[in-house]
Amino acid sequence: MNAKATADYLAQLSSSYSPIYGQAISIRPMLPDDLDIETEFVQNWSAETRYNRMFSAGSYSSPERLKKITRIDFSRDMALIATVMLEDKEVQIGVARYVRREDGKTCEFALTVADAWQHRGIGRALMLNLIDTAAQAGIESIEGEILSSNKPMLHFMRSLGFAVEFSADGPEIRHVSKCLAPAAAAPSTPAQGASAATQ
Ligand SMILES: CC(C)(COP(=O)(O)OP(=O)(O)OC[C@H]1O[C@@H](n2cnc3c(N)ncnc32)[C@H](O)[C@@H]1OP(=O)(O)O)[C@@H](O)C(=O)NCCC(=O)NCCS
Image 1 (cartoon, rainbow, N blue to C red):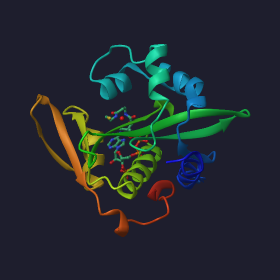
Image 2: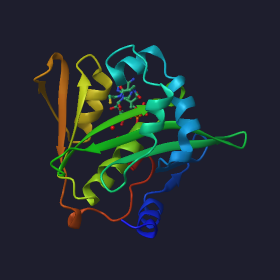
Image 3: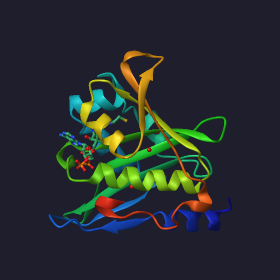
Image 4: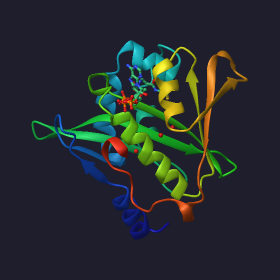
């Protein structure tokens, strides 16, 4: 993709909505300039959120790693962030990303919403947008690994039509996957809000 095509593609993936209870929420692709807000977002995860996302209490936030994960190759991968404006400052409150596998047809996703913003439909909005984006990018299957103990996430996955299976990595992990419609059949506008949408 040339620079103009990339800019047009990213603009198409940006949207915002206003839930009835509060601030307008924007969903847009993550850019290298988002390093600071991504750093603040990751550093504020509770121990439980960190464990559910990383499967360990280990660090995720070395400066090198954060720099790497904010530089997305949009020709292969995607990271969508949810942000709000708080006192004139843009604050990241969630991220959903996918990384395409070598086969080019399948991808792995990850999803995290800031603790203070969970249970307000933001995870669903991010995930629906991510699924739509992956389908439009020609990906045939979106997959992830979820801790077996992460019951709300597994329930959420099922509600989105994901199959939940045992994982070869052991009983603590569930493998989730969803077949995506061919791009031609996918809607061309990103879903919005509570009815809208990862690594
Ligand atoms: C899992 C996570 C992303 C959900 O984000 P969220 O913004 O809180 O989710 P939503 O408010 O959009 O809710 C989505 C669905 O999740 C389920 N859910 C969320 N919180 C729940 C809870 N406390 N109890 C039961 N179900 C719950 C429900 O199915 C809900 O759908 P509904 O509102 O239509 O009932 C968020 O809790 C999180 O970041 N957790 C830590 C990281 C993680 O576990 N990531 C997954 C592994 S990659």
